[in-house]
Amino acid sequence: MYLLAGSHNFLLMESVNQSLAGRTAILKLLPFSHKEMTDGGVLPNTTNEQIYNGSYPRLYDKHLAPFEFYPYYIQTYVERDVRQLKNIGDLSRFIRFIKLCAGRIGQLLNLSSLAVECGVSVPTINSWLSVLEASYICYLLRPDWNNFAKRLVKSPKLYFYDTGLACSLLDIKSPEQLDLHFARGALFENMVINSFIKQAWNEGRDIDLRFWRDNQGNEVDLLVYDGDKPSAFEIKSGETFQTNFFKGLTKWAAITGADTNHLHVIYGGTNSLTTTNGQLMTINDINQ
Image 1 (cartoon, rainbow, N blue to C red):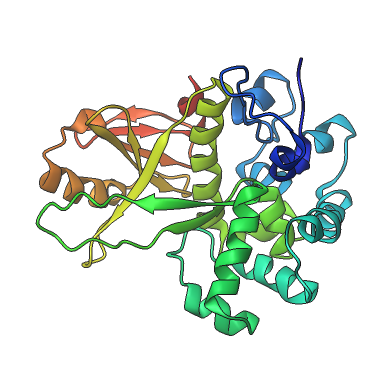
Image 2 (cartoon, rainbow, N blue to C red; image 1 turned 180 degrees about the horizontal axis):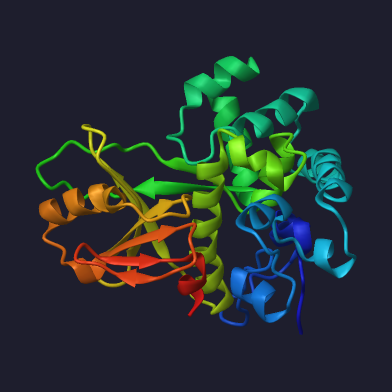
């Protein structure tokens, strides 16, 4: 009755002889959500630990340290799954590509730059990205293209489905190392966006997520569409609230006509607050 596909999801359809149209539902189960870890009593105590540990179930089931899990996960993924999906001759270049992707979390995707650094062609980078997406390693967050009389950025951003895996690829050895790491803000942003995806998929529904940036550098990290009016979220890893957290949201609201009920900042602190500019939230508030 149930088929748990695991990491072989992208090979599943090649093995099923019938289409099963109208007779099946597919549920996408990502690593543990923030709420699942909270309810299960396994949520790490600090934000750095949550980012560093990630949320793959085996870590918590077998009480493994991240360094006991992720390097071997990467090795078996590349040596087994990738070989089955794509005929990638130079695996060392592919591993370099994955690590470069981890260093670009939250950044606009630049295929040419990745191609140059990996020493391969742009079509090859596109092919490799499709592998990471098909195997639920990475995903692309698309820009919102609604044109409000402004030129908008149209390149997607790159994110990982698990921050613990990204930390391992970035050679981060401990939660404390994140305090001064260049990617901490991007990893926190990634973890927050993942929370929205996991909440929706765990409820068996799709979710329309985008970001907004104009050619002047004004930006909103996340737009969540539910009907015609999106809710806008700025994501800040800082633990102390600052009024300038709402700067990009205020600019977006002035262009779109959105009211403050649709403006939110999710930050690394512990206190929620209603302000004149919008709602200040914690990551815990996403799953209420």
